[in-house]
Image 1 (cartoon, rainbow, N blue to C red):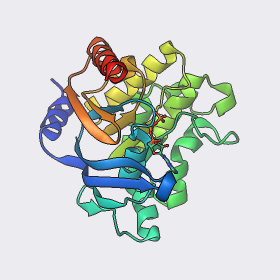
Image 2: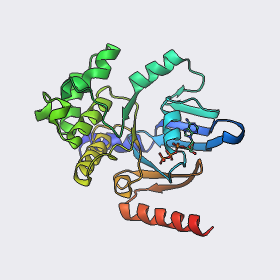
Image 3: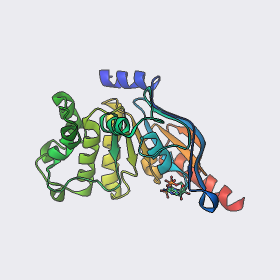
Image 4: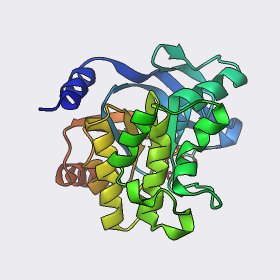
Length: 259
Ligand SMILES: Nc1ncnc2c1ncn2[C@@H]1O[C@H](COP(=O)(O)OP(=O)(O)OP(=O)(O)O)[C@@H](O)[C@H]1O
């Protein structure tokens, strides 16, 4: 077993990368009041790959946004490492997002005029941080982009563009990476590739990934699936497979229709 695998396993049994405690998020008021998150408590382990699933409107994106410091919470707390996000001033929050959180979106959000390497380095360039060259090399190798670094996004396939976005999220060695349906725009083969690279970034690089998805196959790549319904955590599955996730979704769906 490689030393990375040992380190990964050791990390994934202990430390917590991000945590929500009694997190409640209410949008609007009066007739338009929506409780998007209803006292959610959940921990995401370091060096673990977690999928968040649940029906449309169950609060997946809201949970991710609140835990990534992209949205404020109504009550409760959200922490990244030891840092409490609630109450942080805008400037500190921006810094924290920039330096400690990586993001991967459904639409790859690459800059068309920059080549792959420049896109990967962009957040660090903006922050005035120098990437660790050894780390960057490993990241680029992990996502299989070594021979595509001089290509512009328009010269890359959708899957390759998303791999650039994955490398960009990993480049700064963030405490946690949040993905919002990162394979939602990819065909199944390209999606499988990206998911494989995400999983490798957890297994081999010891990174922490939390991904919102609707796709049981995508969830099957994770170490764990957290299921939301009506703004609450309703289930937690370890070592998921696509089949077990699908079974679980069907059960909930049947319950929903018959109750
Ligand atoms: N900015 C907002 N203003 C008002 N209500 C909102 C806002 N954002 C989300 N909501 C509501 O909060 C609830 C949870 O939404 P959220 O987007 O988190 O769900 P989701 O599980 O990510 O859904 P989907 O799978 O469709 O993306 C929904 O009822 C939604 O309508």
